[in-house]
Image 1 (cartoon, rainbow, N blue to C red):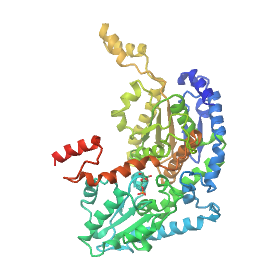
Image 2 (image 1 turned 180 degrees about the vertical axis):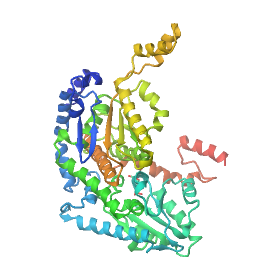
Image 3 (image 1 turned 90 degrees about the vertical axis):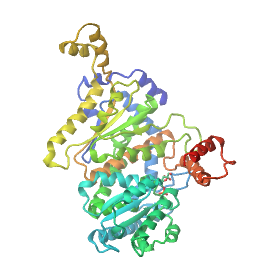
Image 4 (image 1 turned 45 degrees about the horizontal axis):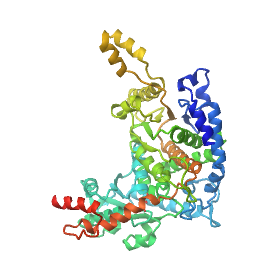
Length: 531
Ligand SMILES: O=P(O)(O)OC[C@H]1O[C@](O)(CO)[C@@H](O)[C@@H]1O
């Protein structure tokens, strides 16, 4: 099938020509529960789409999807089920792992989170200086990026304590975040699936020291979120404030459960449940929609078409929504940690390139930074635009019209481009002439024919955010299945972690560097000379 798709690519039409017969947007778009995904501005023809869908069929996407939802151990390298979907299975039936229904446990933990969150929000749970005003979540990767992204995204719904995040082991992160906070009214959440991550444990210990300077019982203002209950107890956090989860929830898929406690503290249990409901709605669409009308599958196939078939190295995610500021960073972990692999789930070399590199910034800011390259650079960057029909600021509706116009203008500019003739005409009309006119007109040519997709939602509510995140989760999974990858392990992060622990003693001043690789010891010597 890969060869067939390559043949489609070799004769791909100009995208704009595909709009000539009409009906292109209707045929190349999918709507699910108010979410609209438009992939008309790609050079995928009808015949090509049929073959892309066939690729998904041949890879048995539906079978793998059903296995995942059924709790089978599809994370084969870690012998684990993959059930982040169970965390949002609010009204669904039982989900079994090893013959046991996990749903009672999921609901129990969700209720415990809700009780705690509401106690904190109402002031029933107090710090040693009174009502909790600030929550600091200490975590990294999947124990940070989702909650950071979601708390920024859902700011209009945040009516609880202020939320802050410390992730980097760089003391600057800790110092700047704690600056101005009152330890006596601050609640600290230590979020770590393993509770062994160097950065998180170092930050947690330092924050406890900071708190111990001001309150008599720092542990009383700590809660923990982890699968490692022995380690949370050893850190001194009492069981009533430990929120456990199971190994079948991957770190980067974990904000639907206890890792999302900071989100729940910020927006409250009702809105958090709406967030879960949005994700559950997308799960249901993914499970029930026909393969060719299935939004996560469509996103994945468009991704495969652009990266594996066309060879476009990167993918830009461009939310025209300032509050999705951290969404590209969140997707970087979700996509690149999940599918940035070279071997298939049975240990063979992956036949295609994997990736792509995912990056982006909200519009319109990106327009004034890197869009120059997207429009006129030599490499093609498929763009994924996202925009809401409405904003949360009715008094600033004219701003929202501007964001809409900009978003639509960019995808249209990428599609249509501007020819040399038009550029020349415009310059001549502006009074330019002669050789300068010719040369300058060249600078104003836009090749066009640059692909993009657009995801439209009504408004960035908790429900919609849940839909969008689940959409991308499933897209990553489908791409992984098509490539034969296990998207749920992350062995590629291990080597660096091991070496960092090994090198910690070597960066002491006066350390013996004889056992350190010369490529590294040379830099350590330079650093030592500077301190
Ligand atoms: O939640 P933990 O166990 O502290 O891990 C943090 C992150 O580290 C990673 O293992 C990668 O280093 C991620 O997968 C994970 O989200």
